[in-house]
Image (cartoon, rainbow, N blue to C red; front, side, top):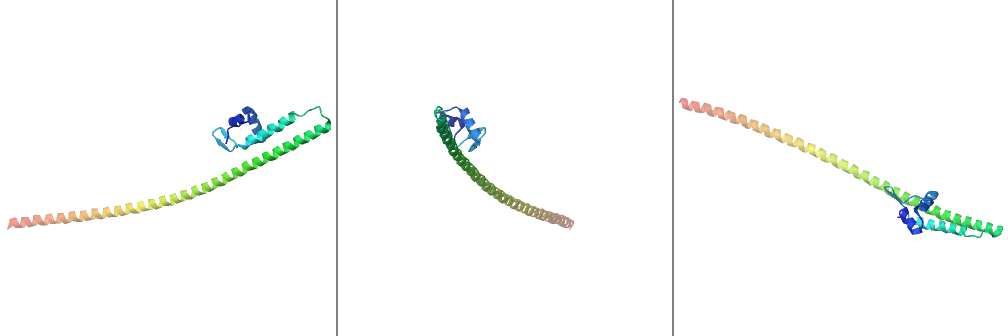
Length: 172
């Protein structure tokens, strides 16, 4: 993956020519991070082919007869067609890569949703077990309080009976 500046450096031209080339052919970046667009190495090949076809066209001798000129124009048109076919293949390749990325993202999204559902189920089980544990603790504490209250009553009765017994003993 290359930035526009890197493509321009490798092709020996300025960035504006690369931007114009990319915009005229609506070549999509392979990846975008922030404002930086990354393109496939194939853009360099396409640009060099385009540059070569333009150089060939400019170098033709304009003083040749009409038949030679027509032949040259046909050659240029064939080169342009070849170039456009290659560009079309490149764009199809980009589309296929993007479709593969979309498919992978769908798979990841599905896996993420399954994980979330699993975690939600686990959370519900933990919450339910916590509620059961709290209820059991409350029941145990209530039982302890009742036992303590019963013991206190029994102790109170014992003390009362002991006082009566002591008074009875003192009275004798």
